[in-house]
Amino acid sequence: MTLPDAPLAASPAPVLSVIIPAYNEQRRLPQHLGPALDYLRKHFPSFELMVVDDGSTDRTAEAVNAAFAGEPRARLIAYQPNRGKGCAIRTGVLASRGEAVVFLDADFSTPIEEIPRALELLRDAAVVVGSRDLPGAEVRPSQPVFRRFASGVFDVVKKLIVGLWDIGDTQCGFKAYHGPLARQLFALGQVDRFMFDVEILYLAERAGLRIREMPVRWADAPGSKVRFWEGLVNMFRDLWRIRTHPYPVVAPERAQPVPGRAAGR
Image (cartoon, rainbow, N blue to C red; front, side):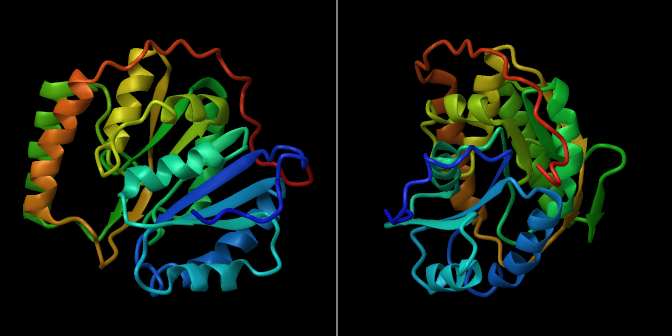
């Protein structure tokens, strides 16, 4: 695993940690990193931006390092071999230090400009889940019929096995957490691939934490890494694993409200 050379513990903890998982993203990701850094510098000067390279076999790491050159608040974490999106997010969360932790997909399907609304909701919630299903969500283009059908089947199976009846869209790639609670929950994570979202929300719900959904803008981007039949098999396996794993009881202390937009801090 590649970590920063200089330890960050001596510097004050940032208000916001932003985590982006990446696997073979040398083409899609670099174009977004410059604008993302500009946005964070302007609106959240107290930030850290982390890209977690999940065992890429292309030049993702080189592209990210080039985009982050000269910015001490941005860093790359890389490891081999590929382990899955859940492992990448967990690695980033456990390395984070922010009062709030946000993660979003490498294709920026949900734009970084949605962060301020999520932080506002974190003032009275522990977790904010981006939703493509709530009124007010903007999904472009509309998802194909087959994809909507598959999503509906997954939703029914998920609820029958692990619950989460009150959360409509567990799989949107945009989520925000109180930082200390995120690190406690993700430290218990067992699922390395796409069902990690369900696992962490299951643990949060079981702990009695308040979870809020937020309608988001979401633009479909080509290049999805999900394979339907392989994903179906893994879905059943991981959902059953979540349902039966002997997780310890989580009783986290309530964190202080997360500050909103932190310009000037």
